[in-house]
Length: 266
Ligand code: ARG
Image (cartoon, rainbow, N blue to C red; front, top):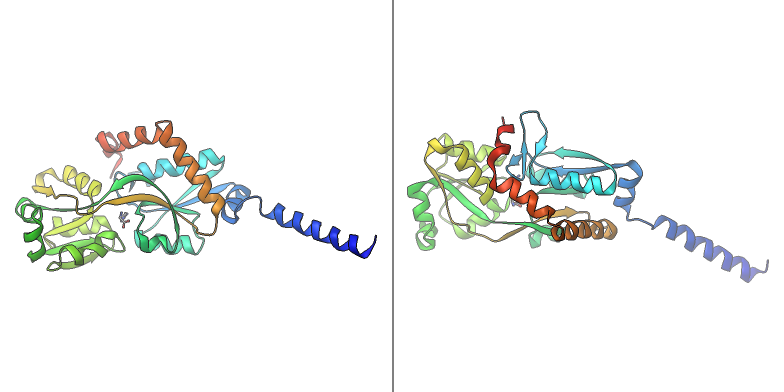
């Protein structure tokens, strides 16, 4: 073989080698090879993700995670952790994606990719009637001095300063712990995603609480490693399909309009 042919042959072999490796994105490739999709979520935000009596995580997010694993033909491994630990776990490759009612904020989006929205949320306050009346008037709300519990690492924590500058903030580890602060009188109110506030109000009917207006517009999405275009593309197409064929609407209706799943909670 002449020298020229030999180097051409070498170049072609190299190209083939590289394209064989580049068949799937790095994360998707690992998911398919190991036969397991590892999804990070949390355990304190019903009806999206909440720990049931039997210890499993149930909710819209769990259904979406299971649906994706099924469509990929792999097993699902749901790893539940505190909300503020989820993005570090994604960035260090401990989980393949995060499905945890996460708002697609511009700041988070600088670090990770998002596909969505699969649900539109926003922040509300859960408090006694008198406090909620004051909060529903923006001018009064701005001057209101009160103790507000917010879950750590959430958008609730980041927006309160701007919209409720006079509030004294207590940062809680989880949404449940923020709720406890309200129920035990440590805080006057808590801020969290509206669906959480509605469920908490429903489950504590005797406590005479109320849910305020929605203060923000928050599109929730699936967080993905920024370096895997193929996985991002796969998740986009999965969501386009379940949106188009009515599955997402059915699931959302199940979790948001019928409280029957609450029987499964501790
Ligand atoms: N949507 C809010 C955010 O992205 C809260 C998400 C869920 N929080 C939780 N503690 N499980 O910040």
